[in-house]
Image (cartoon, rainbow, N blue to C red; front, side, top):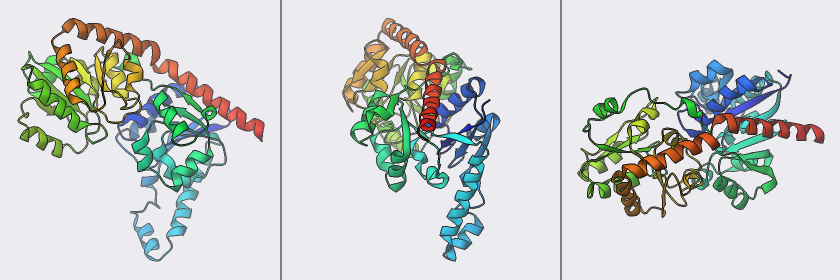
Length: 388
């Protein structure tokens, strides 16, 4: 390994898109890269242990100067909050210094507050996995400074690249698109279709439509229910499964009041979503906004046809015309019609599923995307060294 390393920064270690993408890349990077690295987190999560197995980690929310720590609360009450922030920042910088970084790799714009503590004096590369609603959620001086101090951006989709250029004013020369990727060969089910159907309590001869994500407005969990209700009016063997955690109580109430309790299931957060995707017949992405969802790539790796909304993010860049359907934005009626079409046509499901499987293997395997990311990292470091 070369002397100077990389500090990777993630807002947390939850089982969600950006942290999962980072974890998969770092597994590849550890085997194929030539620099030491460490990971700095704003907060922990279910994936923390897997990151810790790879390299040195630091979790700000576990630090002695976190806001809920007794000494911090005492010092804030004594109007010494600025001193605690300085102490926290110093600890973060000391952790990063161990790697002797040549680059700070920021894994999402949600990490802007972490960069505020780190205050790096080396080039910053920001990998953007977000679109407009996330930018509005994290807007503020921290995000503004992150965007301005970033030397190079990686966009996870073309629509994300366009957002950075048009809405954020980032020069296109500073943005490169590297579509999200997955370890395709590792996306395999551990349990069979019958076992999943038994767990969900649905008939063995049912046809299953899957959706996925943290249950929320952005992921369109409510739209999934609307779509399912329409499908159920025309197809008596259709059942539905939402794979993912989040606040499901309100959506379960909608399901109950809509008379769909026997037809729709919520799994909660699961470790192996591939089990449920493999057991399904169709994957439906009801997201209002999703830059380039990994769940679509995972469903494709399991050869499932995919249906999504136009203008809802980057999924149409993958689906195109051969491995599913793209319907008008928020048009759940047309989405339901496409679902019924596929449920009634096993041949179409198989044809589109095969196309999805071929495409994800040819375009989106991590062995293809990771070398590109590493090359961008090295180029960013080299460009900075020439400017010194």
